[in-house]
Length: 165
Image (cartoon, rainbow, N blue to C red; front, side):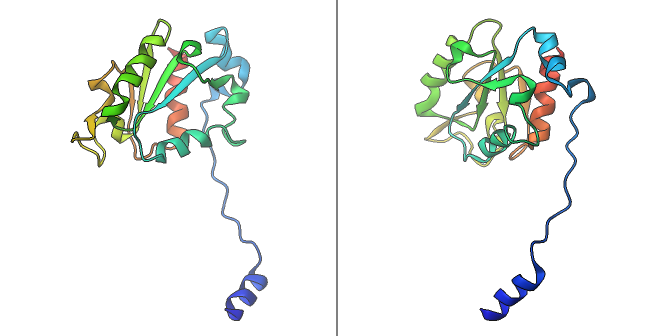
C-alpha cells in the first residue's frame, strides 16, 4: 500500500487530453438558437423505466462544456410548459398512463423524442411482464435517437436538427 501511495505522490495528477465538442457552427450562440424559435426551447424529460445511463448523458448537457442552458434550451418540470417531450427507457406497465398523461398535457405541436436503444425497443429490456416495450407503442414519436446511451454530442445534434426545422 505504501508503494502505491508513493507512486501516486511521485506521478501527481495526470489529466487526459481534452475532447473537442463539435457544436454545429450555426448554433454557437444563444441568439442563433433562440432566433428560429423566437424564444427558448423547453424540454420535459420523462424516464419511463430506464437504467439511468441516458439520464446521465442528458445531465451532462447542462455542464459547462455543452452549456445547454446558456444556449436557450431549458428542462422544465411540467409538460404544460414544454415544447418537446424527451422520453428514455422502455415503457414499464406502471408508466403507461403517466406517459400518456404527459403527452396529452404537451401543447400543440406535440414533439416527442425517444432517446436511447431501450426507448426504441432495441435494448436489453424486451417486452415482458414488466414492460410494454418501445415508446412508439404508447405515444407517437417524431424523432428517435439510437445509442446505449447516446452521447451528449449526439443528443445536442438531434436538438439542433429539431431547432433547424
